[in-house]
Length: 107
Image (cartoon, rainbow, N blue to C red; front, side):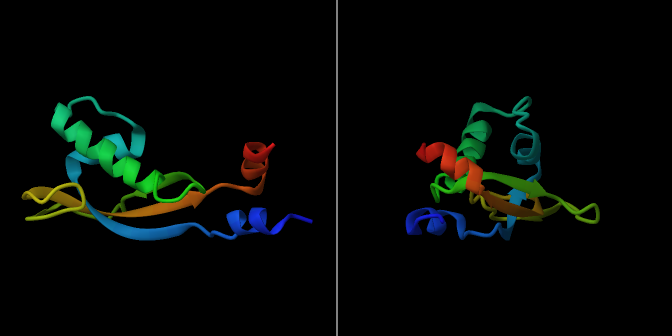
């Protein structure tokens, strides 16, 4: 039987939310492809990435999805910065550690 602390670590289901992101950030967030980004843009993506994975020690990774029916549009703000940009609404799923991963971290 798993102890209470371990059970609490494993009680998290994946969490999904919608985020409005600049279209230029998607290759980096979805595939780790930072080519073509300025240093400033890359830093914005890294900060957003860090905010997702550092929010909870149980976060294993996240998945960014774009619907095939999604289209870019102009917005004055988005979740990376507060400047106008062509953006797209993305579904982000935060995936938490599995029991095996938690056990390997403890042992």
